[in-house]
Image (cartoon, rainbow, N blue to C red; front, side):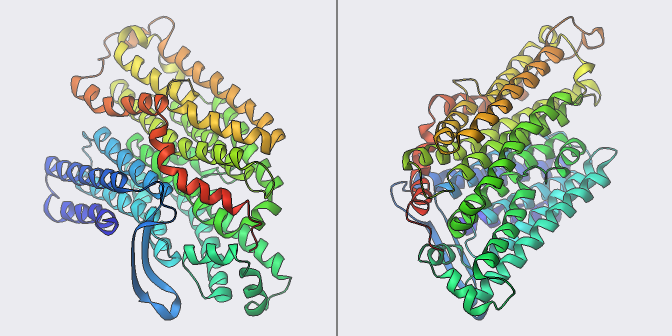
Length: 512
């Protein structure tokens, strides 16, 4: 089922290019049907997943190049299931938002499906070479979606996005080549087992005759892998490509970048850094926590200073992913309560899903606003829209308050659990990070005040409210915000096994 799910969108994109090149309607219908089928398959995997069973499920393993340690090995745990479902939902939302796209629709919808296939492959591959192919393939359609359909500065933004990500990818590749030379393994599960049994450092000592001690070499490999994921997440100061890419990309593409692609970095932290580099994470814990704090606080202040809605929510995206980095780094110690570590990691997984859903919805609303205003998206361009388009204002207000972390909506459980677990484990970091929560409230409420409140801008007196079809399309996303906010056990129950394994990694000494 995982292989079918991975290659189904790829097949859909090829069919669109082959059969629907001259028909916008057939291209978008085919894309929507394939994306819907992918979501159905993801839900079937979710329904068949056994949360109480530890380890990977739905595994497939085939020899590829045994002498090089390369195999087709796929599988999912609670984290993988969560990421597959989130990706399928966000892609479907993006397709619904771009339904009226007039510019080269067949190429556009095919690229979206190719990107979805890359996401599925990244979140299910368990062999580095196999995983790295999908990691890189997801970059290519994203680059062209920004470069061909973006704003006036799209060329610079797309090039910056591509180069930053490539630098991180090269660091990842070099680090794993070194690990392969030391251990003869590319498989994530095998490498994690070797780390837990204390066999990687002796392998480095025996097989990598480099300058420096095995411990210092291992620490260098850790930082190289961290760089690859820090760029993609992004972590401050490796985030500077993101505001330009999010602002210049069409809003429907930004939904994909923030809702799914940015989660690839956090996924890498959880799938690779935590299990394979536990000792190195503990040794680097203090600088990692400072980076997490900076990723939470500084973008929140930057978002407050923006006058463009897309740049405001771009910095907000960095801020919200900073909470994930904070929770992950806080548990990277062999001391501390297992209960608090479980709370922090469960909060991280809730935050991944919730932010993906909420951020994608917010950029969807911005796309709708741009269509009604002739492309304007400045915070000061509007005013009093609540009286003119009350349904639009109400639904976008729900998404904004979900992003703010209002109890009862999906943003609250994840942030609450992250801080609940982080305060006992890293009190100073959690205390400073509260400033990020405060500034998030400030800039989000500022958006509501300037865009929706106050006197009506006469220019928008005849702005149309959401149509019936737009309301129907938005309803599932809004409903999910309430469902997860009121019943977070829908996700926490699925990820319990994965969280338990990560906590054990930092409760058994992490031999490496």
